[in-house]
Image (cartoon, rainbow over all chains, first blue to last red):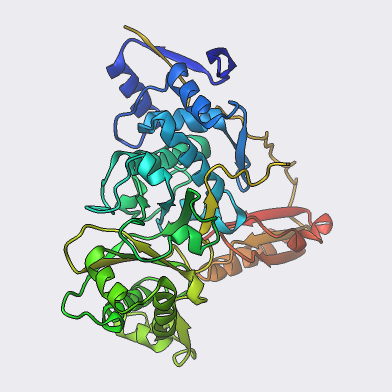
Length: 352
Length: 93
């Protein structure tokens, strides 16, 4: 049990709840929304639940040499609205983001304005009442909303990633408030995303990806997997033309109505990945169609694939039951940042 | 009723950074520029290099480009740093 005296953060005292809100807003310690005042008792409860010492080192952001301790992360998690049971997911997600291939500093400070997409798999989804169905890319449930927001407040307060400070986004997108989804494993014939990416079966896991905003597609006029995927591929190609031609991780979010057709045709996620890998390609000369002729140079006949390999596609089963919709989530910028998957409770740097 | 809460920030706990000693003059100095590597920075750093050479009489400008503009500079690019009098971290977009 954590004693409140073990918490080393500076303490502040204000008159009441309203004064606390103004304190946080005035110092840019929040994202514009109200926060839960992080009292020692609430922060201690998070640490107790995760069985973490307050000074447990979750990681160090290498570019700015910022230290992320369990205590400081718990404070921000409480502010975001997290309950103690949400806190281990926040810790795991930050651990994943601090892995070198993710390039956390670049992904959170770039003018490109990507957000931190989190996909959650395993039993923790049910334990935390996550909902992978209606409005899954919006505010679908309490747990995913507050976990995603906790990450943003950690960036604000521990890494100075505030708009105009370390966050240099030209535009950003709404996912920068919270961008966390769970996968609809119960209603999917497919392997969960994390298991496909190496997490043990039945483990709870997180996958993180530096991601642009979702691009919604619609095709409810066919049952053929190839034709459905051609619509997704067209959207990927549009992103390659209009935004960035460089290959990287893309994510597809596929709701039940479209999943049914893949299931009927016995298409696995691997089949989908392979089809998209083979077909999501453009020639550089196509940039002339959208005003970018100046940078074609002598590379017009060069073909660019959206994915460095089929495994770079993240296929996520999620969404409400009705509607032939889907979504393409593009990468921040090619392979500069790579998606990372880890199991919750994993201590990546621990000595055993 | 008053509320006591914990500070959510890093409380300036990062390593201490100090400015490097200033050069009295650039004349005759070897100055390195590390570019973050974005394409549009090239003409800017070209002009900067010319200004260092022509107006400030710098002896040599060493141009270095990071392998990845989103990560710290690779240590292998700093092998010759001992012979530089000044190093400029260049960021452009």
